[in-house]
Image (cartoon, rainbow over all chains, first blue to last red; front, side, top):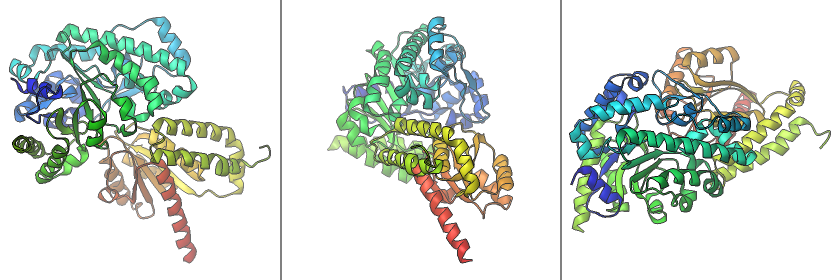
Length: 355
Length: 192
C-alpha cells in the first residue's frame, strides 16, 4: 500500500493504525527553497516543479497536498475573478491579488448573465492549465504512484470565495443583506463556470480522484448566511465529485457554526488552530487535518514541536486524523521542525497502538 | 431628530450602536459579515453628516491625529477600514495611507503630519515582518519616540518583538487603546 493509499484509508475511517503527516507547503516556503522571490516562482513552471520535487525528496514521509504539488500562478484567487474580466495584480514577493473587480454593481451580474458563461480557459485559468499540462508531462512517476500526486488531482482554487473575490469581500458580505437576489444570481453563474473549469482540468489530469478546494468564506458569516449563501454552492461542486477524496481547506475559525459546517459534502477538513480539535471531532464527520498554528510552528524548537504535536495527537487519537499545521506552512519554518513532526507522529502512533 | 448636532448623532447615536456590534463580535454572536455591514452603515452616515461635522470640527478640537495603513506587500484592508471608521467616529483626525505602504512612505507622512498615533495593519504571515522594518525606519529617522505605534491583523504577533507599543486583535479594542493613550498623554502634559 502506498503512503497516499494509507492516508486515504485513514481519512475514510477504514484504517486507524497510523497518523499520516499531510502538509500544505507552497510558494511561501518553496520560493526560498528554490532561492527566488515569489513573482519569479509563480512565473517559472520548471523552477516551481523542481522546488516541489526537491521538497518532496527531502521529506519522503510527508504528503504535500493541495497547492503544495499543484501549479501555482494565481491559481487560488484568480480563476473566477479573471474569467469574468477581472485583473490579477502581481507583487515582487507576495501572493497575487485581484487588482480589478469585475463585479462592482448589481447591474454587472446582469451583464455577465447576458454574456453567457466564459470559456473555461478564460483569464488566468489558461496559464494554470498550461502549467498543469507541464506538471502532468514532467512529474516523476514514482512520486505520483507513492503520493497520489497529479493524476486525477484537482485544485481549482477558491469557489464561493472566488466569487467573493470577484467583487471584494466587503461587497460580498454587504450584498447578502442589500442585494441577496443579485448575489445568488452571481453565485450561480460563478459556480457554473467553476464546474466547467473543473471539467477542463479533468481533461488534463484524468477523472477526478482528489478534489481540493480552499475556501475561507465560511468563517466570515453566521449560521443563516452560511446556509443560504455558501453551503449550497460549495456542495454543488463537492457533490459532483462523490467518490473522489474531497478536501475542504479552511483555517478560519468556524466553531460557532460547526453543525452547519458538518453539512459540507467532503471527507477531509484542513482546519485552523483557533478551532478546538475535540469540538470539531465531536460535531463533524470529517477526517481532520491540522491544526498547529503555522506562525507558532515556525518558531517552536523541535522539542516544542514534539510536545505540541503529542498534546494534539493524544487528544484526537488514531483514525480520521492527519497531522498538519492549521493552514499552509508559514515562511521560514525550519525543516528540523518538520522532521520533528514526522518523528513524533510515528512515536505517538506506536504508543497509541500499544494501549 | 431635526436640530440635533451632527457630533451628537455620531457620539450618542452611531458609536454606541457600533460598539454593541463590536461586543457581539467579540462574543461571536456576530461575525465579520455583521461587522462589515455595520461599518458600511456607519460610513454612509458619516458621508451624509460630513458637511455638518466639518462645521462642528471648526468649533471643536480633534481627539488626536493618526496615520494608518496596511504595510507593503499586503493588500488586505477590511480591518484597517473598520478601524479608520471607528477612529474617525471617535473624533480622531485620520490620514489613511491605503494598502501596500512602504516604510519610506510611513516615515514621510509621519514627518510631515506629526501624528500622535501610527496604526499599521497586515494579514499575511509574510508581511507581518514588515512592521519591524517600518519601526526601524522610524527609529532611524528619529521619529519613533513621539509616536504611539499600534499594530493589528489576525496573525498573532508580539508588539514587543517588532518594537510596537501595542497589538490589537480587533478594531474596537484598537480604538479603546488609542483613546486611553490620548487621555494618558493629555494627563501627562497637563502635569508638566
